[in-house]
Length: 71
Image 1 (tube, one colour):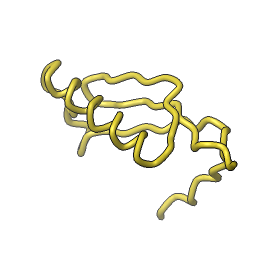
Image 2: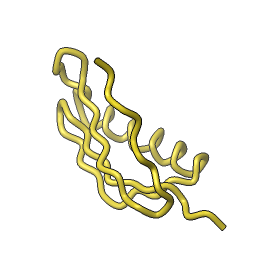
Image 3: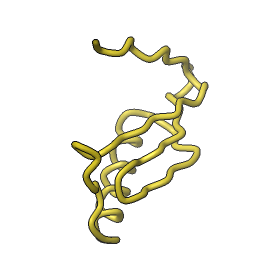
Image 4: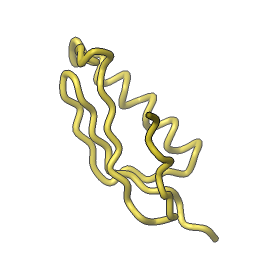
C-alpha cells in the first residue's frame, strides 16, 4: 500500500530519508558522497529548497529540508 503524500508547508522542515534497494549501500566511497552533494546542491538551488541538516551514511541518507517560503 503506498504511503500518503507528504504535507508540505513552506518554511516548515521535513525529515526525508532515502535507502538503497534491498538496503544495499548507496555510497561506496567518498567520491560518491561528493557527487551526491553536488547533485543535491544543484537540485536545491533549482527548486528553491533549503537544507538545514544532512547525514550521508553507507545505506541511508537523512535530510532535514524545507521548501522556500511564499513571497
